[in-house]
Length: 347
Image 1 (spheres, helix red, strand yellow):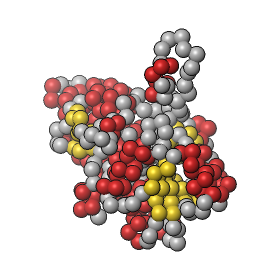
Image 2 (spheres, helix red, strand yellow):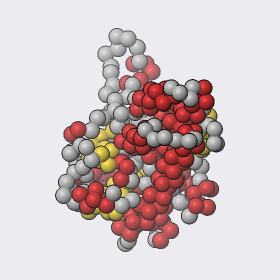
Image 3 (spheres, helix red, strand yellow):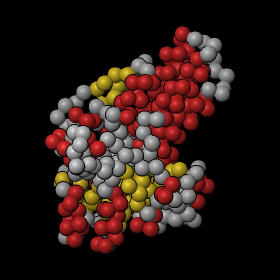
Image 4 (tube, helix red, strand yellow):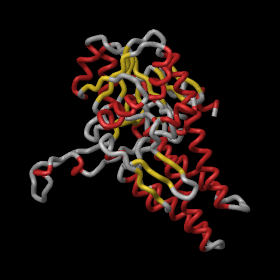
């Protein structure tokens, strides 16, 4: 399995002294890595969506803290902790919705309270462990999710949830990778407007792995379901509430509603680090609003224009529309506040 992961283009590459980030805004036409040596650079890479996907954002932030420790401890072995705390606060401001970001930063900040003989080595090791654990979790989820797909002939996915969005292998795409090794499976990917992560990233990534995939317009999803071509919708998550309500890329909620109408099952795949046990439901999830300029045609992007844009990056799918949440600690069928407790107890 590790050998297969290494053949796939990685979103993040740790060099030992810097973090190389694949600029996903330029895929699939251009494959280029930007290199960062401080937390400010990593913050900008996350905020600008060079790196995206909740697990990858958390991993990048952990490496950002390791770079902060490397930078500040070398020049101020007495007061370096406060400078690292400031950098952690900076990283926390990069994206508001992905809970993995805050989970990873909390893990790294906890190290600051410990007496460390070699802070640089300790923080680098912690970041590398977060990265390795994510890959292991993805592989485990891939196998459990594939179990649910036994007998299925077609699936559809949304946004990008593969190697490009995680430490490696993927969440929802990890399930698809595992399932296609076991059975014949037609794979469909929606465009995922307005950033086209499905069209630019998912179909490209699957093609790199030799997995046939069919791209469909987002607006064609209902008709695709009506045709009977798919049995499951499989998506990732950026934050899951304690009751199973799930925030994911904008357009996920509409797919869940359509799936309910057409008798198509809906699966969410995410590590337990994506579950926010401090919020009871999706009502409490902060939804990131990005610059309207990302959506507006250039001709309307000027002061005084009567045309504006509403640009939420995520929406929330209620738990009652979800058939299964697959995590690294097990599968929750028909998620609710009660059924989710089994996963919480396993952590």
